[in-house]
Length: 316
Image 1 (spheres, rainbow, N blue to C red):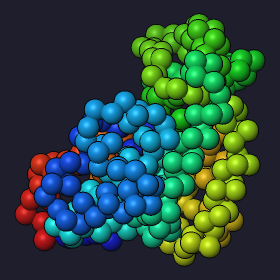
Image 2 (spheres, one colour):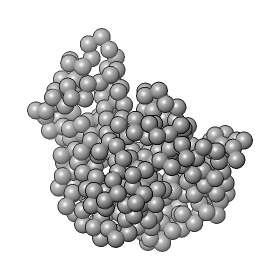
Image 3 (spheres, rainbow, N blue to C red):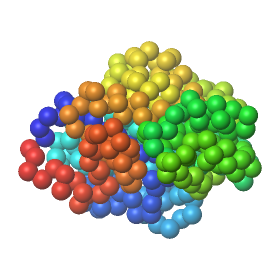
């Protein structure tokens, strides 16, 4: 494949899952099947069956997270084998950051699926189901500092700075209607304004995830000797906004802080775009493509083999 040194790849996170994800790669490519088998061996349950069937557990966080990472790695291995896809820069939204670290050679795949299953379980257990909630604030040129100031008296935090036009807030479910009212009055003006409640089971990337930082630090520490910091500077950190540093302790800190702080995806996109001539999104869904459009960058989304064939047709 041409220009791989100037190519970035990004991975969507939780919410992109769907039954049947990755099955076309699994059916056609041995290297992709091996990724599912490797994950299953590490976890002790059949990841392919979970991804391809109609098991409701696919939407339970502790299963969703390893299933998405496995699907994305299976797709990447297939793209590498068939089309020589070898990007030099990597990013991922929330959970997708772990896929990015695997692809860059910072984290081993078999260990990562265990890490994210533990992460998912901790995130779900942090707050009782029904207590927390998240909502997307959609408008034009949102002033994040002003938004933070407006909701500062509520048990709600900025969770995702996705683009200039979309910010996700997260916190107590009962506080979201008041947040909506305040933001509608202060941010809308003559601009269009939407407040969309998200179908999530916990208030991710908020102060309510602070309680699990310690337990998750223990999970990462157990795998610390397997982390290859040398490759980290080609991967963006959701927490920092820019690229990771080589120091293993800083990598761990960034991943721990990501739990209870905002995903600064807007800065991740700018960082990746500054290094790359082309950007691809690889995963079971394509939520990141439109975010890149807001910074004037074309992002090609690959959600299956047919999309890959269209994207890479004629490339060597």
